[in-house]
Image 1 (cartoon, one colour):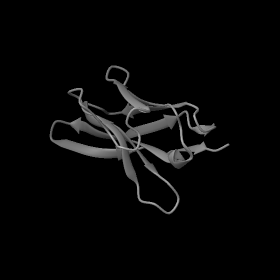
Image 2 (cartoon, one colour):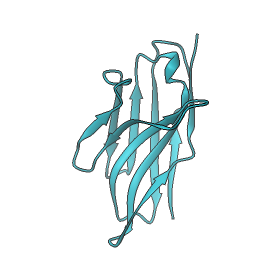
Image 3 (cartoon, one colour):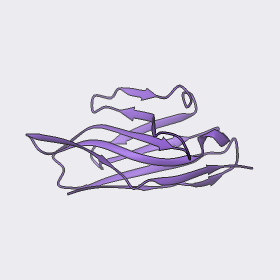
Length: 120
Protein backbone atom coordinates (compact mmCIF):
# COMPACT_ATOMS: atom_id res chain seq x y z
CA UNK A 1 0.00 0.00 0.00
CA UNK A 2 1.38 3.37 -1.06
CA UNK A 3 -0.04 6.69 0.06
CA UNK A 4 0.59 10.19 -1.28
CA UNK A 5 -0.44 12.99 1.07
CA UNK A 6 -0.48 16.59 -0.14
CA UNK A 7 -0.38 19.71 1.98
CA UNK A 8 0.06 23.43 1.51
CA UNK A 9 -2.94 24.35 -0.59
CA UNK A 10 -5.08 27.35 0.21
CA UNK A 11 -5.86 30.82 -0.99
CA UNK A 12 -3.59 33.52 -2.36
CA UNK A 13 -3.93 36.84 -4.08
CA UNK A 14 -2.76 37.34 -7.65
CA UNK A 15 0.99 37.76 -7.60
CA UNK A 16 1.28 35.79 -4.39
CA UNK A 17 2.99 32.52 -3.60
CA UNK A 18 2.12 29.10 -2.24
CA UNK A 19 4.14 25.95 -1.70
CA UNK A 20 2.63 22.51 -2.10
CA UNK A 21 4.23 19.45 -0.53
CA UNK A 22 3.63 15.78 -1.13
CA UNK A 23 4.89 12.99 1.09
CA UNK A 24 4.97 9.34 0.01
CA UNK A 25 4.70 6.47 2.45
CA UNK A 26 4.21 2.74 2.41
CA UNK A 27 5.98 -0.23 0.94
CA UNK A 28 8.20 1.73 -1.46
CA UNK A 29 11.21 0.13 -3.11
CA UNK A 30 11.89 2.87 -5.64
CA UNK A 31 10.34 6.02 -7.09
CA UNK A 32 10.72 7.19 -10.68
CA UNK A 33 8.69 10.15 -11.94
CA UNK A 34 7.16 12.48 -9.35
CA UNK A 35 4.94 15.28 -10.43
CA UNK A 36 2.05 17.63 -9.97
CA UNK A 37 -1.14 17.83 -11.99
CA UNK A 38 -4.12 20.12 -11.66
CA UNK A 39 -7.77 20.14 -12.58
CA UNK A 40 -9.87 23.26 -12.79
CA UNK A 41 -13.68 23.11 -12.72
CA UNK A 42 -15.03 21.92 -16.05
CA UNK A 43 -11.58 21.14 -17.41
CA UNK A 44 -9.47 18.04 -17.83
CA UNK A 45 -6.64 17.22 -15.49
CA UNK A 46 -3.38 18.58 -16.86
CA UNK A 47 0.30 18.21 -16.14
CA UNK A 48 1.86 21.09 -14.20
CA UNK A 49 5.38 19.83 -13.58
CA UNK A 50 7.26 16.55 -13.37
CA UNK A 51 10.70 15.47 -12.20
CA UNK A 52 12.36 12.19 -13.05
CA UNK A 53 14.65 10.17 -10.82
CA UNK A 54 17.47 11.21 -13.13
CA UNK A 55 16.87 14.87 -12.40
CA UNK A 56 15.04 15.97 -15.54
CA UNK A 57 12.41 18.64 -15.08
CA UNK A 58 9.43 19.42 -17.28
CA UNK A 59 6.89 22.19 -16.89
CA UNK A 60 3.67 23.15 -18.57
CA UNK A 61 4.20 26.25 -20.69
CA UNK A 62 1.65 28.10 -18.58
CA UNK A 63 3.77 27.81 -15.41
CA UNK A 64 7.31 28.07 -16.76
CA UNK A 65 9.29 30.72 -14.94
CA UNK A 66 6.75 30.88 -12.12
CA UNK A 67 6.61 27.38 -10.62
CA UNK A 68 9.51 25.23 -9.41
CA UNK A 69 9.32 21.52 -8.70
CA UNK A 70 11.80 19.81 -6.40
CA UNK A 71 12.17 16.38 -4.85
CA UNK A 72 13.97 14.80 -1.93
CA UNK A 73 14.47 11.13 -2.63
CA UNK A 74 15.62 10.32 0.89
CA UNK A 75 12.52 11.88 2.42
CA UNK A 76 10.27 10.66 -0.41
CA UNK A 77 8.81 14.11 -0.93
CA UNK A 78 8.10 16.35 -3.87
CA UNK A 79 7.34 20.05 -3.57
CA UNK A 80 5.90 22.66 -5.90
CA UNK A 81 6.86 26.28 -5.26
CA UNK A 82 4.32 28.52 -6.96
CA UNK A 83 5.15 32.19 -7.44
CA UNK A 84 3.45 35.01 -9.31
CA UNK A 85 0.15 33.20 -9.00
CA UNK A 86 -2.66 34.03 -11.42
CA UNK A 87 -6.41 33.47 -11.11
CA UNK A 88 -6.13 30.86 -13.86
CA UNK A 89 -3.92 28.79 -11.54
CA UNK A 90 -7.01 28.08 -9.46
CA UNK A 91 -7.55 24.33 -9.43
CA UNK A 92 -7.29 21.17 -7.39
CA UNK A 93 -3.63 20.10 -7.45
CA UNK A 94 -2.74 16.42 -7.37
CA UNK A 95 0.54 14.76 -6.53
CA UNK A 96 1.51 11.83 -8.75
CA UNK A 97 4.30 9.27 -8.64
CA UNK A 98 5.51 6.10 -10.30
CA UNK A 99 6.40 3.69 -7.52
CA UNK A 100 7.87 0.22 -7.38
CA UNK A 101 6.73 -1.91 -4.48
CA UNK A 102 8.76 -4.80 -5.86
CA UNK A 103 11.23 -5.06 -8.74
CA UNK A 104 8.63 -6.67 -11.00
CA UNK A 105 5.95 -4.03 -10.67
CA UNK A 106 5.76 -0.28 -11.15
CA UNK A 107 2.45 1.43 -10.48
CA UNK A 108 1.19 4.98 -10.77
CA UNK A 109 -0.29 6.58 -7.67
CA UNK A 110 -2.28 9.75 -7.00
CA UNK A 111 -2.76 11.90 -3.94
CA UNK A 112 -6.18 13.03 -2.80
CA UNK A 113 -5.75 16.57 -4.13
CA UNK A 114 -5.41 19.97 -2.51
CA UNK A 115 -7.33 23.09 -3.49
CA UNK A 116 -5.49 26.20 -4.65
CA UNK A 117 -7.56 29.36 -5.10
CA UNK A 118 -6.12 32.58 -6.50
CA UNK A 119 -8.36 35.61 -6.26
CA UNK A 120 -8.38 39.20 -5.11
